[in-house]
Length: 142
Image (tube, rainbow, N blue to C red; front, top):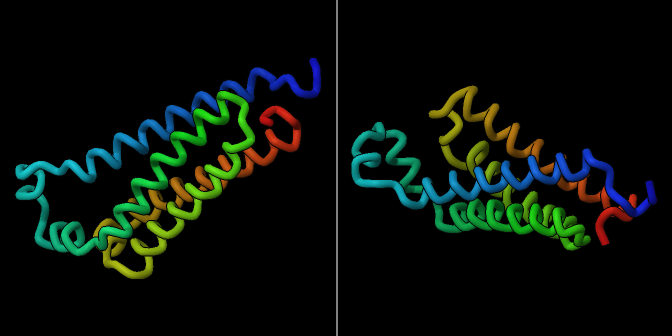
């Protein structure tokens, strides 16, 4: 196998990455398109956090999801731009999680599950950056 030809596991990880980021886009879409019924079903504390989240945090969420999706496509197209896009997405993800953990009361309300989910998302973002960097180093993306 030529050094520049990615192995099968590159395509497998890249495909899983794309699915993960499509799910991220869906979650973002659900977050911004909350129905009236869903709002009335929220507790007072949940509604307070939802309504008090600054637009910049919501924009960071959307940017992280959309840019990571674009990075996944770039990875599948074997474009080095994927690394830059994953890094930008990681920055946006970190800002959003920082707000949730240290500025708002969101993770107090969500408890351990919220912290675990935020940790998984952050670790996935870091892993995707490392994978793209490794792929670039191996000349699988150019």
